[in-house]
Image 1 (cartoon, rainbow, N blue to C red):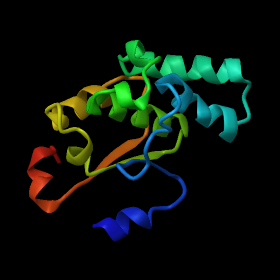
Image 2: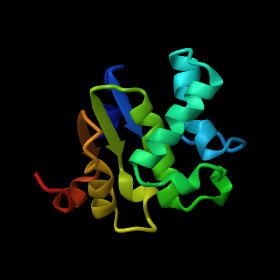
Image 3: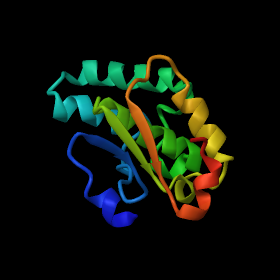
Image 4: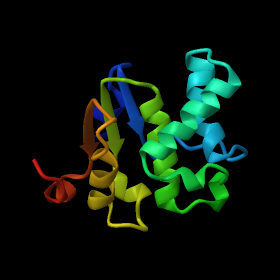
Length: 136
């Protein structure tokens, strides 16, 4: 399973434990890095896009938090927002239980994915014994 996750093509955005946040930056700054450096937007435009993404995900209140001040669920939201900012057709969430140990994560992910403005295909790569947690 892990080999297949590591060999995903470049058109896939990933949320994974081994893709951590920058600890010295706020949630908003971590998300804004994507439009700032990948699409060369101005700092102001990147921050506005990052704030809009947090609002879309229903977590605008975590914008000022740094990694050490976040709960695992809040950290996941920032990692997810960062991946969504890449605007790739596929999103892979790699072993969410390892990242979301503070919330019932299948429900938490379903709630985040339910926002109409978020398109693309979301896939969860997890251990085989956890497959029953996800509807087919």
